[in-house]
Image (cartoon, rainbow, N blue to C red; front, side, top):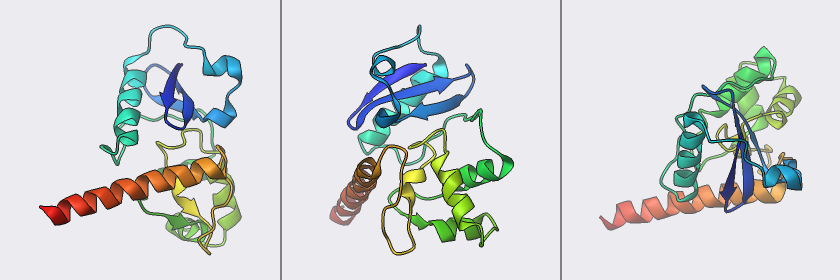
Length: 166
């Protein structure tokens, strides 16, 4: 386990030694967890921190880490896998996500799976919004969800401007 101090607060990364198994958002941590590091970080945790840093600097759009969530049903894992396909800087509705996992009537189940995502940010559940464009629940709070979406939109805009200038 290792703490990562992001611009959005301290994130706690958890690994089984070979893959990332969890990421706790600031609102999910107690004060004790926010200040604790247990031993030297494993390679996968060091790489996760490196990639998170690049993401928050706007230099990385897609994470390339071995993931092995310790929890979840087959359906939840299917939803989490599909979340990884939602492009940086874009959003998808819960109903669109339900259709993509071939369960168009399971919008609430998709929402529940999204809410139980054990590796947020890296598995970008923050990119899922209501059909009307509203921001609905997020484990880290709607304010953090909006901040993450704003960050991605800002990075996308900067890249677009840079491409147009060249």
